[in-house]
Figure 1 (cartoon, rainbow, N blue to C red):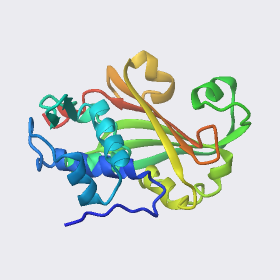
Figure 2 (tube, one colour; figure 1 turned 90 degrees about the horizontal axis):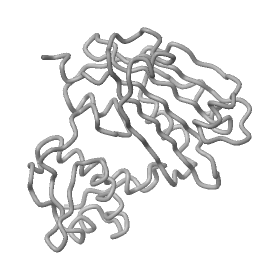
Figure 3 (cartoon, one colour; figure 1 turned 120 degrees about the horizontal axis):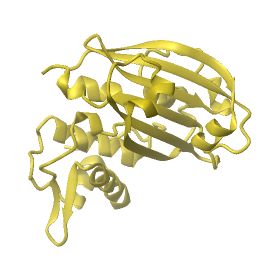
Length: 241
C-alpha cells in the first residue's frame, strides 16, 4: 500500500519522508538494530525518486537514527540520541510523540532593527528590519525552551497575524504554501547557563542547555527567510524522573 507524501506542500519531499521514517523508529515499528526496507521498496511505498529516498536516509544518518553498513544495508541505530538531541523540524510533534503536554507563551513579537550580530547569526547581508517572535515553551507545566524566531521582511507579513502560540514551523509552512523550500540547515550544540543567559534571562532554572540554530532557505532567495535560535534545558528527561 502506498503512503503518499504531500507534493503540494512547501516542505521538501525528502524532509517529509525523513519525518515518516523517523516516526516508525520513535513508535517502535522499526526496532533497534533492525534493517530498514531497501531503497527501491521505499520508492514504491512513498512514490518518490531514489534521490529523495537517499536524501531522507542521509538526513536520519546524520541525526543518529540510522546507520549504513557498506554492502549490507541501512539499520536502525541501537544507541540513538535521547529526546533532547532530536533535531526535529517540529518540536510540538516531538513532544506529542513522547507523551508530553506542552504550551507556548508569546513573550514578545514585533519588528526590530537588525544589528551586526543578528545579521551575522541569521546569515543576512542587507536586511535592515525583521519580525521577531520570542516564546517560552512549557512541558507538563515546566518551562523548558526559550525560542526566538526571526522572519525575513519578505515573508513576515504572512506570519505576523497568525496564531503564534501554535507550532511556528507549521504556521510558516501553511502560510507560505506558494513558496518552495529548497534547504533547511540546523545545528545543535550544548551550551552553559552563562552562554544562554542573554536569551533565557532567568526564565528557565537549569545549569546546562542545548542550543539549536536553524535556517530555512526558499527558492529564488540566496539568504534564509527564517532563522530560529532555541535554547532547551538539557535535563528534560529528568523532569518525569
